[in-house]
Structure formats: C-alpha cells, structure tokens
Length: 210
Image 1 (cartoon, rainbow, N blue to C red):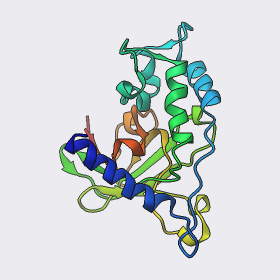
Image 2 (cartoon, one colour; image 1 turned 30 degrees about the vertical axis):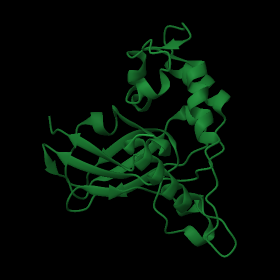
Image 3 (cartoon, rainbow, N blue to C red; image 1 turned 60 degrees about the horizontal axis):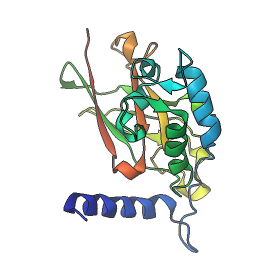
Image 4 (cartoon, helix red, strand yellow; image 1 turned 120 degrees about the vertical axis):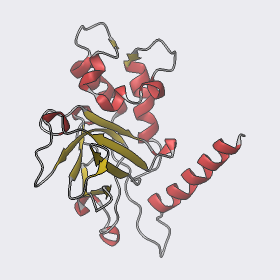
C-alpha cells in the first residue's frame, strides 16, 4: 500500500467514525440516504442522453457538471463515455457505503479575491430522486463556507452537525450586495460530486465578475 493511499484510508476511517457513530451512549447514527442506484441511473440517462445512444458524452454532461467534473470516477473502460451500468456502479457505492454525511468546506473567490457574505447552495440533481438533501453555507471574511443541511435531516442529538450527503449537486452562489453572473446562480454551470471515498472535504470555487 502506498503512503498516499494509506493516509487516505486513515482519513476516510476517521471521517467514517465521526459520520456514522451510533453505539450505545454515543450520538445516534446519521442515516444513509435511500439512494436507488438503478432508478437514479435511469433518470440520469433520460435527462442527459440527448441523442439517445445509451451513453453520456462529455458534451452531453454539460447538463450535469457534477458528473462531468468527476468523469474519471465513472468511466471505468476509459472510452470517455458514461454508460448506465457505470452510473449504477457509482451510485451503488454510496448506497452501500454506510456513510450518512460527510464534511464539505467551500472557499469562494471573486476575481482572485476572497468573497465574503456569499451564499453557497448545493442543490441535489433531480436524478438523485429526492434521496439526498441540499446543503448551504455563508462565506466568512476569507471566503470560506462550511456546508450544512437542514437540521430536520439529522438525529435530534446532532442538530448542530455541519455536513452534506454523498451525491450529485448543482451549485448556486448568490450575494446580497454583488450581482454575480447568471452562470453562477440562475443559469449555473457549477456542480460537484460529493463522495467521501475520495477524501475530499474541501473545494475552491473561483468566480469572475465578467
């Protein structure tokens, strides 16, 4: 096992303990979202396979930037296309992971400068079938936001937990005083696949005023 892989495994183990602790006398477990891999894959194909060839091309995935940005995680045969079977495999991993919630911290910049007071919203892709919840956060003075779900999605003793479900999301960013371009909100081209097995707990979102 390489050092990098070992470190990643250790981080994932630690994160998993934090995310699904549920032994007697400890916090209740956060339930794993009831993702239906077959149904979600079918809905994704229906939504994004514009030419009906049973494959999702890079161009077609502009409609789902979350998958497009994580193409290599799906494209097991390296043909630069995504099949329904490859989607099912990826979604099944989340459904069977035992992980109810993971951390995600976003750092937002505008024209290479930290953007404070921005609202960052992760909105589940429709193909997730309503199984996962949205999450949001407001950036601080250094442009950083820790995402949190609505407390109703968490056990009673974990209402202050900040985290997000694994899955596919569109990202919308708005600001109370700055009119950000539509490509970041009403016509967003931003998206993210949130997946705990990658060890990713943070992302940078660089914006431009143009």
